[in-house]
Length: 425
Length: 137
Image 1 (spheres, rainbow over the protein chains, first blue to last red):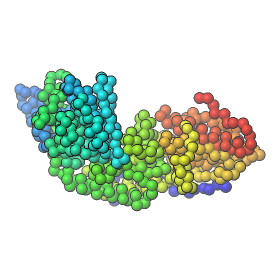
Image 2: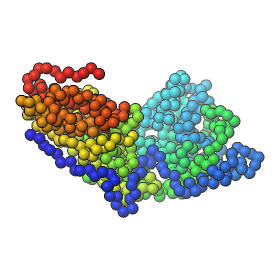
Image 3: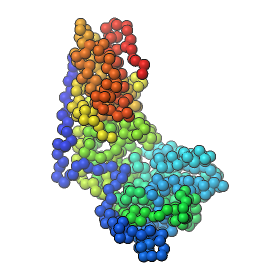
Image 4: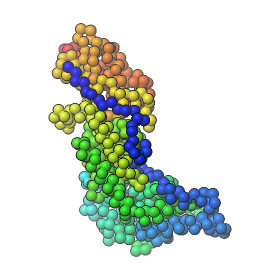
């Protein structure tokens, strides 16, 4: 006897009616990248055609004008993070900054030791750099994280030894938005004379960051995560109390006090500077607005759907981030159903390598829930109407896909999926 | 990654979603894949025991759009075929029909496995001791 299930007929996307003031498609993936703020673009444009000089041309006004733009940007970035201008080095982005920080410290301090401590949830720019250093004979400890995504400070203490020269822990995680206890980590490192690097790509411009209050010695910054341009970033390198030195990884002329050679990306740098200036002014009230929107999204979804799990601590989290798993529904199929909304998933099916999210795995999230996860990144240009629309589309798509799901069917029949002997693929 | 129109069509209008009575001797149930892999397909067939023709087929899938489309297509294809004809369905036929990219070929493999598993289950119920041959790839 067949039990025909009525599948609510899915309208082809073009027919989805967006409510007033909602333009489709909606971008809600602000941890992947952000649109440039129009005020940043306005600041940047003159540097392409009128103020086009090489900032290193010391002998004519074209160079001086470009240099002025660069130095203004440098001040703005320093101001946002509590640094001095001499401590800001421009790079091509946070990936390069991470490489420069970790390799630069490792090489400079290799007489002192060869042990580096990091965490399993770091960005690949940190993890892959550490893996490369292991090939060169460095020893790396990858700290686990707890269920909420935070490292255990006792684990860190225990891992530190006389050969430890660097601890590198990100300020905010790009997948689950979780904030590590940076100040406590920094203090532990300072007490032991260990250099502390933090990949602050997702944190700078979103939450307050102060290199002195938080005992940070080296820090990576990215332009395109804070409504600035892509292809530009910075590295903060402490000059005092204590003075930290790094070896360059790019040679060729000794720009940026010998730390990073190469003609400066003046338009990009000007954009990064303006993005930081805007963040300095707007960050605190923007954070309130974004966490309100994020909580609204979460509550609207969780009121209507059951078996929705939040990945990572809600208490220590970026204001605009939400990462949830929808049991019995696979992430890529969910993305397909909401294809007028841009978000991302921790499902293996969405990754180039067919591996599920290693960050979710590190939390102890089962692979099945990792496959069912969606990351939302609410940003400066998202509105309440967009949040409501996204929530509603998620709800209707999850409901629809659960009707298609054999796992949902089995769960409703009272079968414990963990007891089932699955056919290996 | 953009999907072929056929995959999108199956996703938006899946054919034969649902369940058949597992307990019936006319029904074969195939359950393949695993939640940890991100792909689970349940494919069921109801076979006319006199003609050996698959008269009804239903599916449910936990997986990506390509997996859903592959299993939906599988139910379309087995309907009306005899059990032995259905065994000739190859995963590459599914790949061609849906224009699946290389990274999604495994979805078609799972669909083929689901067909064989359902047929195997049905045959077992008929007392036919013959195991369903899964071709060496």
